[in-house]
Amino acid sequence: MELTCTQLDSILTMYKQLETEVRVKLEALKAPLEAKYGRPVILFVESRTKKSNSLIEKARRYGWRLNDDIVNRIKDIAGLRVIVQHLDDVDLVVGIIRQRTDMRVVNEKDFVRTPKLSGYRSHHLIIEYTVHTPDQAITRFAEIQVRTVGQHFWAVLQHSMMYKYGLDVPPHIAENLRLLAQETNNTDEKMMAMRRAVSRDLKTDNARAYVFHLV
Ligand code: 0O2
Image (tube, rainbow, N blue to C red):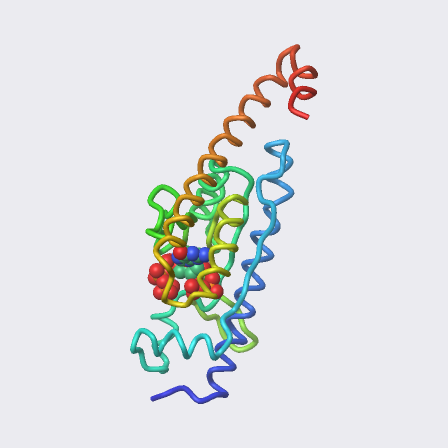
């Protein structure tokens, strides 16, 4: 049976609770990670719960009926994003999420090592999380995307350009965006190498000279 508007609203309210709880838990990792590694690892966390029109549009796009089962089919009704500094921080945060006992990773897509055709890079995790609503405990899916600030910069700008073109993206624009994604990844790799060099150098007598030279 199709969901009524009231049922859909109450489903989305539950997802909003899920989003809020998972976001708090991911944000809570910022301080201990910074204390452990002596630098910020997580820069910020963003999140959203799909609006009903976006949920309806996605169900329609895939030809799914808007019934009780929709919450098992659409796994990103609650979506969260963790933006980190460096490429190796992506693996670090993904590893931490995998080990948690309050959320269970059920699927992963590593678009960092295997980027999408568009050039898009991020690590996607589908988790199962149990929400304790005023009435019951409900376990539902959510998507967590972990990406570097460089990958985020590219994804935000690319998304706004794709939005402008809809499905008719001129091939030269798509190709340029792919090239820029590659350049962004090269920069990410160089930044990570520089961080490692700086951290090695800080342990030697050259520290002050090296940092001065960078600035
Ligand atoms: P929003 O508003 O960010 O949520 P599907 O989820 O079925 O649409 P798929 O391929 O099964 O698609 O899921 P996937 O690839 O795991 O993740 C889709 C999400 O990844 C998108 O969500 C974007 O957030 C992001 N994404 C995937 N490919 C690209 C890309 O080429 N460019 C950018 N900028 N983002 C991408 P939504 O639902 O599209 O939007």
